[in-house]
Structure formats: structure tokens, C-alpha cells
Amino acid sequence: MPSRALQLLASSGMETTRAETTRAETTRTETTRTLGRSGIRVSALGFGCWAIGGEWRTPDGQPLGWGRVDDEESVRAIRRALDLGVTFFDTADVYGTGHSERVLGRALGRRRADVVVATKWGNVFDERTRTLTGGDDSVAYVRRALTASLRRLGTDHVDLYQFHLGDADPERAARLRDTCEELVREGLIRAYAWSTDDPGRAAVFAKGPHCAAVQYAVNVLQDAPGMLRLCEEAGLAGVVRSPLAMGLLTGRRVPGRAPEAGDIRSRPPAWLKGFGDGSGADPEWFARVEALRDVLTDGGRTLAQGALAWLWARSPRTVPIPGFRSVAQAEENAGALEKGPLTAEQMAEVERILGRAERTSGRPPA
Ligand SMILES: NC(=O)c1ccc[n+]([C@@H]2O[C@H](COP(=O)([O-])OP(=O)(O)OC[C@H]3O[C@@H](n4cnc5c(N)ncnc54)[C@H](OP(=O)(O)O)[C@@H]3O)[C@@H](O)[C@H]2O)c1
View 1 (cartoon, rainbow, N blue to C red):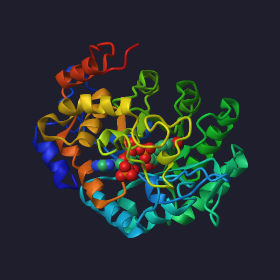
View 2 (cartoon, rainbow, N blue to C red):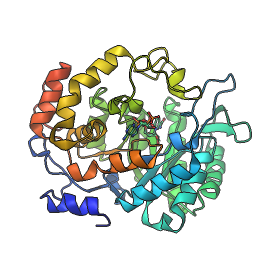
View 3 (cartoon, rainbow, N blue to C red):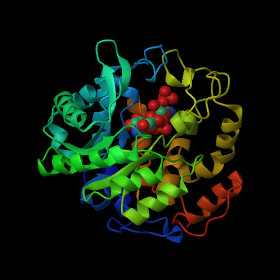
View 4 (cartoon, protein in one colour):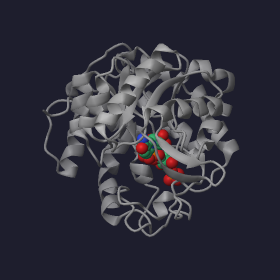
């Protein structure tokens, strides 16, 4: 076990080898997880590298990044995460139009061999103008995109290669799944996934023997029982994006305090929930976060740590990948590992506060 955090988790009586757990047993968790059927082991917490890509936008100026970032701070944060036992990093070619992959590759350096790197393809962009220009779901594009990602990351293979177009046509995606199988045979990737919130689409990829995961959004405010169920049935890991509801679940995003210009949350697209018109946290969402504060911070967790703990308790297949922009955030998020999942009682309390139907087990309801 590489870090003090993981050693503490092990010595706290939590098991390190269980593949399944039930709601009643959610005080026991893994310090690492296996990505589906792939056998690839990752820390139970990954780091999401969207924000560290810096600013980029659509051709008409809609921000797609999280505002300005300090690359040196990003590098320090990644190295701190490594020291704290984090072995899983999620990026995409399009984050910062290539910049996130470059920063991640630089930060990992020789430690690349010790970690699992996930990236994504499907979006087309102009690196020079830092602009998203479209999408490409063709078979020919996969290899072009992968070659470019390998160069930017400074590696000879991607561990988990993810299709980024969540609403793409499932029949065309089936051809991409077969292409991914070829890439596995050639040693260019180890496993693959679809990044989609649609269980039906995820099931198309799941038919491939080396499909290891699905990346989708779930957090304590936005449950996703259909996708959790699919992960169980298909034997996939759930790589959980937006586990902190894009910052709302840290409690530091409040109504009336607008994110800086250049931050996607300052001009939220229709799919981005919880930030209203861009003037700060939506009051209703903020009220729900505040209502959860006591239960999520019980036992000495911060709010962000409590939100991650909810995900681990929700399913043993979840691997949350919170974003970060600083060493302090990296330390706080990695620090959630040693505190483990919420207990069954805390989970029930969350459901009660949010007025959701009571579930009786950690398994997603049928
Ligand atoms: N496949 C896809 O289409 C897709 C879509 C979205 C995300 N993702 C992946 O999922 C990752 C995470 O999701 P996300 O970036 O949407 O949102 P998130 O993880 O829910 O929120 C991350 C943001 O919360 C804030 N934060 C994080 N830790 C904090 C802490 N300890 N204290 C205070 N604030 C903290 C930071 O923003 P501020 O400091 O600026 O508030 C950070 O950028 C991404 O980085 C990306 O890798 C994938």
C-alpha cells in the first residue's frame, strides 16, 4: 500500500479485498477498486483533470473551462495526490484543447508507470485558438485522436480510453467498440469505456470483452439508479464524474457570488444544473447542500469528503473522480480515502433529508 492514507484505511479495520458489499456493510470498503472485468486496479478515488486544462470555449464564446489555472499549482497538486496514494487520473483530449493532457503527462513524468491514466476522444478542437469545433464518431478518427493523446501525455499506451460523445448514435458506437478491441490487441490501450449518462448506450459498449467501465454523473444530489444497476449487471466500474456537483457540494459556491468570467459555471449551458443563471449557486440547490451539511460532515469529514463518502457507500463499483485546482483541494479530496464510506445510518439519514424513497440495501433498486 503506497500511502499513509491507505495504510490508515487498512489499519482501521476496513477490508482491502472485498469485491461486493451491501448497504448494511458500508463501513467496510476497498482502498482500491478493480475497473470492471479488466483486472486493472485503481485507488478508490481518482482525480479529474478537466479544470486544470484552463480556459477554452465554443466558437461563439461559451466558456468550456473553469477559468484561469496555474499550471505549476496543477503539477504540484497531481504530485501531492500521488504521494497520498491516488493512482487514477481522468482527463480528455479536449480539456483545455490538449492542455490538460500535457500538464498531466508532465506532472506524472517517470511515475507514469505507477498510475492508471484515462483519457477520452470524440470532440474535435483547435489547439491554437483553444476552441471546440465539433465531434467525430468515425472509426478513422479514433486512431488519429489516440496518436495525438499519446504524444501529449508522453506515454505509449492509455489504460482506459473513453468515448466522450455521450449522446452518439449507438450503432455507430458499436463500430467504435470493435475498434477499441483492436486497439487493445495492439497494446495501445488496456481497456475502454463510454462516457454517457444513458444506460442503454453504456450497454452497447459493455458487450465488448475489454469494456471496463462507464463514466457518468452521480452525486448525493443527483442519484443515478439506472446506471448503478447496469454497472452491477454488466460488471462495469462506474467512473463517477461531477461527484461534487461541480463544486456545489463543497459548500463554497454560494448564491449571489458569481464564478469568474471564463468559468463554465458563469454561463451555464442547459445541461449544467445547480448554478441557475450564472450568478452563483442556485438557492434551492444550495439549501439542499446546507440541509445535508451535518450528516455529511459527521465524524470529522469536510462537506466534500462527505459527498465522496456517500458515493462509496452507494455502490462498491463507484470510483469518484473529483476535479481540483489546487494542492489544498487535492489534499482534502485525497483525505476522504482514510475516512471511508458513510454508514448505513448516515445513508438513510441522507435519504430522509432529501425526501427520497428509502432504500434497504446498498444495491441500486431494481
Ligand atoms: N465525460 C464527461 O463528459 C465529463 C463531464 C464532466 C466531468 N468529467 C470528469 O469528471 C471530473 C470531475 O467532475 P467535475 O469537474 O465536473 O466536477 P466536480 O468534481 O463535481 O467538482 C470539481 C470542482 O469542485 C471544486 N472543488 C474540488 N475539490 C474541492 C475542495 N476540496 N474544496 C472546495 N472546492 C473543491 C473545484 O472547483 P472550484 O474551486 O473552481 O469551485 C473543482 O474544479 C472532471 O475533472 C472530468 O475529469 C467528465
